[in-house]
Image (cartoon, rainbow, N blue to C red; front, side):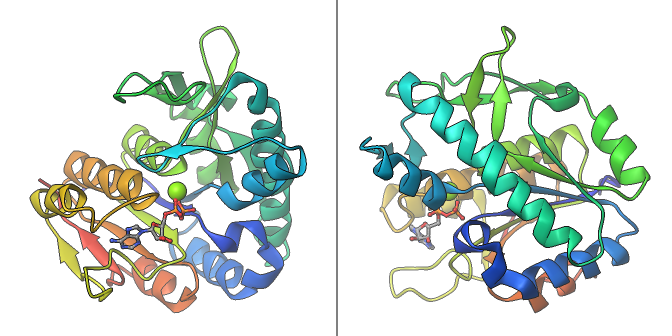
Length: 264
Ligand code: ADP
Ligand code: MG
């Protein structure tokens, strides 16, 4: 097992309205203490972006759970994710007494991103992880600052790229040799056809669930990122709900919750 930090990705409504998720920030602060500062947060913010784009009259398109990112929408997406949402999260966490630092993937070259080429369609300014430099994040966690990363990347020319936050979290987990990855979302984990929680899945079962469209939309990049991270670290990735903060404290103690996505 790796000995790096625990990486937690926060998605869904907990990100858009941090004031509604006080129990989550309290659990994050507790996990930060239990882990002696070895914690890194990554966030999405899809709903906040959707709302801003709609206000400006843009239309939003997603394919296979990925936001199609036309060049003309990029400044707005960066403004919402790396600006307003990121700083609101820093504020919510600092209100719990933890010193948080809001960054994007490109800060300190923590993650080098290049234009995504893994899709059968052109997603526009969507990035994928190319490589990374763990120094800045280690410097921060070793001094007990909590890094809070938006999923905005910079390419080699300094241009913005929008990275799916689950992909970004799996990338950071790999760069930092994380001890584990937790993906928090609006649902309790991966749900089956009857919408019952699946407590544990193998990579082959994830592929089958996607094939049968039981896993769809935003759960596609989430489940595949979970498989990738689990296999790279040889330890399960957890998909759980942000709305059940006790789970988070249990996970920080090494116990389980939600869906365990097993390594291949
Ligand atoms: P996040 O902001 O956390 O990334 P997404 O909306 O991108 O959230 O992805 C999570 C969503 O995926 C769930 O809220 C649910 O609507 C959808 N989903 C699709 N298939 C499944 C499934 N089999 N189990 C659970 N959620 C699923
Ligand atoms: Mg998502």
